[in-house]
Length: 77
Image 1 (cartoon, rainbow, N blue to C red):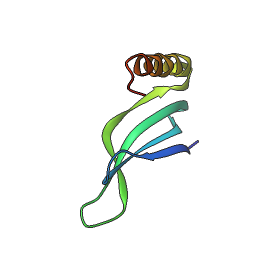
Image 2 (image 1 turned 120 degrees about the vertical axis):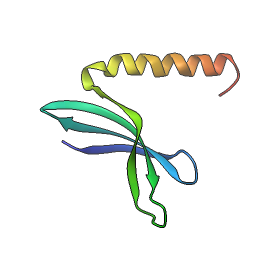
Image 3 (image 1 turned 90 degrees about the vertical axis):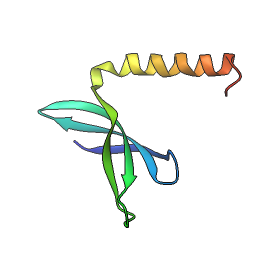
Image 4 (image 1 turned 135 degrees about the vertical axis):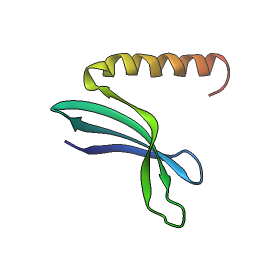
C-alpha cells in the first residue's frame, strides 16, 4: 500500500509528505522531506524524515498533542 495523506510546504524548495507505505509486509507511517532537483520542478525524497510501524501511531499522536500543549503554554501557537 502506498497512500499520500498530507503535503505541506516546509520552505520554497522543500515540502513535507505524510503517508502510509508498506515495506516487507509491514504497514508504515512515513513523514519525509521532499526537495526539488536542481534545474527541475520534480520533487525527490530526501533522507530527512522518519518511518515507523503503524502500531506506534498512538504514541506519535500523544507526542504531537503534548507538543501542541507546550506550544500553546509558551504562546508559540
